[in-house]
Image (tube, rainbow, N blue to C red; front, side, top):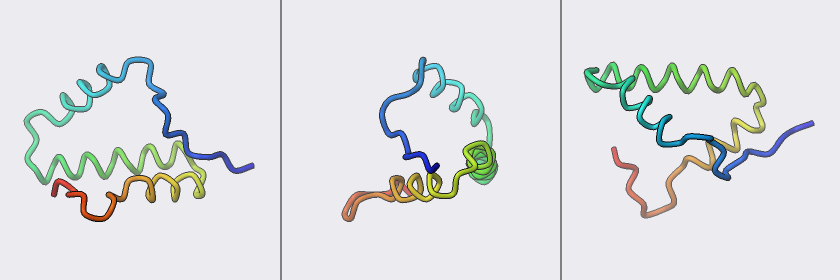
Length: 71
């Protein structure tokens, strides 16, 4: 059975996670930070393991037309 992507708030302590994420990047160069993000994405994608859910996540992450990507 394919599950749907959960976009509702689902973290017990989102501020703690955000702080941990920032701390993980602390002191890294831009390239090393990008590498860390890529590894994290692949680790979490492997944990999810459902291609349909992963495709939903990819689609959800694409910025709407006209919105800056921040890059």
